[in-house]
Image 1 (cartoon, rainbow, N blue to C red):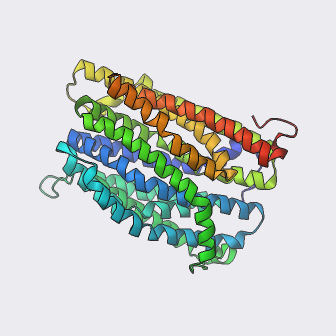
Image 2 (tube, one colour):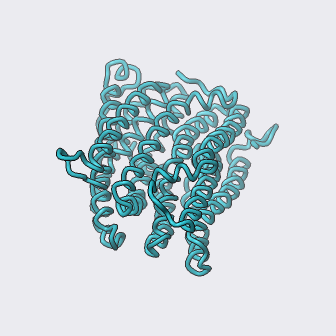
Image 3 (cartoon, rainbow, N blue to C red):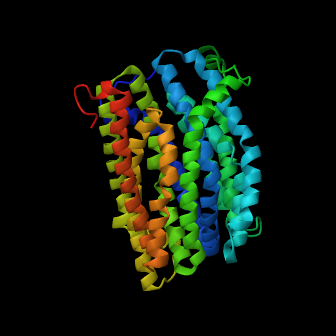
Amino acid sequence: MMKFLGHGIKELLLLLVPILIVLMTRSTVGFVEKIFLSQHAVEALEGTMQAIYIVFLFQLPTIGFANMIQVFLGDFVGKKQEKEIGRHVWQMIWCSLLSLFITYPLSQILKPFCFQGVVQAHAYAYYDILMLGNFLFPVGATLTAFYLSVGKFGDIVRASLLGFTLNFFLDLILISGVEGVIAPWGSRGAAVGICVGQTFFCALLLRRFLETDYREKFRTDKWKWDFSLIRDFFRLSMPRAGGRLIAVGIWSMATSMMALRGGEHALILAIGGAFILAGSFLQESLLQSMPLLASRGLAAQDRSGLRHLLYAGFSYTVLISLALSMPFCFFAEQTLQFFFPGEVVEATWSSLKLTAYWSWLWILGNGFNTVILSFLFGMRDMMFYLIFLACSWLITFALPYLAIVKGEWPAHTFWLVLAVDQFLVLGVYVIRVFWVSRRRFSWLLKKKELF
């Protein structure tokens, strides 16, 4: 069983490496998928990128809800109560499955208001299939949290690599088709590849979860619905899920503003989104590891370990951001040529390169504030998270609106403004961590500041 030692980057990497392999593979497959779509038709790329922002309205809150199982599992591991793990994981699986009956009807109500123009058909095909498979993502997040909490990293890596390999080959075959054999499916083929790959991933993890050794050690045979546990999940998880819904809702408003302007604005939105999704593994790897370690350290009152965890999180963010700067900044032109192998107007090409730079800056700021946010999640300060995000439209939507619509700044500055927003949010989270530490975890600051 993995113990919380808190000796710096090595301990964090022990948990992060399998997550990083999984998420980097997913990001790479997703990035290649966007290249396939752009080569099939630029409208297919623009349509799927517009659709994915609306899909995130449903997908990210349900994943955020499921990820809060980390806090429970971290407590059980820290307190040596491993036999409680199985039934808690099952309750979150049931919640994830049932989420389909909420998210899909709501998605169909919202759909007519979200897409228009030449990209509408591409967006509809992608959107409908992903919304049917939306429940697969919180199920996958729940099972991943289980394997991380018990230190069984190899199971996650194997299942992920197999699932993403299947996804890649389906994209290769279905998006552009096979001449004389399979007609091009375009955006529909991309969505099918994602859902089939995720189904395979969940099936492999669930099969191992139900094997005899796990049944005996973690009581994974306790699968019956337990309303009292569900109530505890909702009490703790709904603020996080609601917060992510608000955050993604505001983000979708901002991106819709760009999409509706069409032309270069829609193109910049699609390319910037593709870059950010390619780097999304940084935020997600932190969110799938640091709240677990932070809650475990808080339960053990390991002040030194938590301080080292904080520094390790920042170090990890810097290292990954430096690695991403190569394709995003230093070789941005070469990276963009994968999307546009033909001629592109010089002014548009310059805007695309600046979009790559600002996307990298956004990823860096988002990584830093995710490190601090992980501590807030470990402290279970969920109501602040919900309230803050409810007010965050003032910067996440208002600033891009003033810049792009009122100020008529160039399209690429949309991503610069959103990058600045990430650093403003970082400042708010840092202040809040200090406040909560003084009020509820005073032992953290007895000898030395957390920072």
